Amino acid sequence: MEVKERLARNMKRLRKERSWSQEALAHEADLDRTYISGIERMVRNPTMTVIDRIATALECSMGDLLD
Image (cartoon, rainbow, N blue to C red; front, side, top):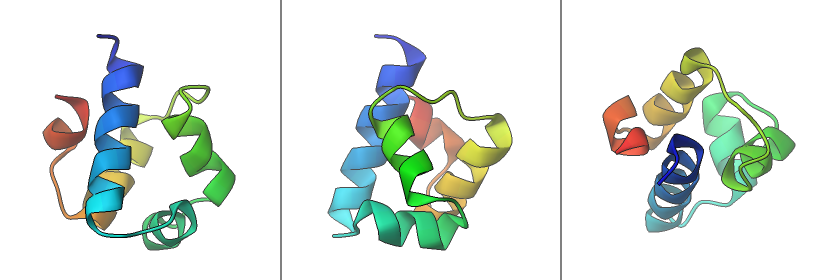
């Protein structure tokens, strides 16, 4: 499985476990909702800094998002 697919799958799963919308995650990570959507649809290539912000917002490690 490609890393973009793993990131999208894990990010969406962790977001839904918290009952968060894409907008809620975007707010917590200080990102735009459309950027979160793009990552989940695998059309965006986030930097490590962005992945770190998402991991911090979801209270998980970057590894949890990329495994």
